[in-house]
Image (cartoon, rainbow, N blue to C red):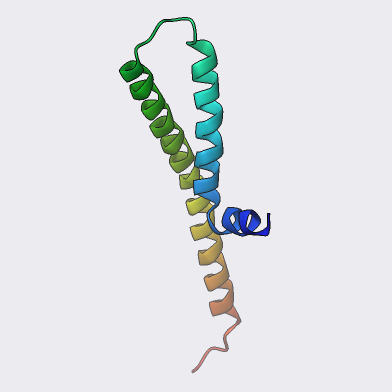
Length: 87
């Protein structure tokens, strides 16, 4: 269990992708169970669903990257303002 926690902390976006993909595939299978799809069609739909989940996590991650970059810039600016000015 400790290894799982370490993996989640080390790879939050990958973990989000896995969890979201599993949920989306379950919903897909539940929704289309009576449609009569062939094995190749199921495979294509499942692969596309996993890709969409990955894109969703990636796009959501853009906001996190922007916030991290802004926070780093603010920290750098604050540190620079605290330095004594040389004449």
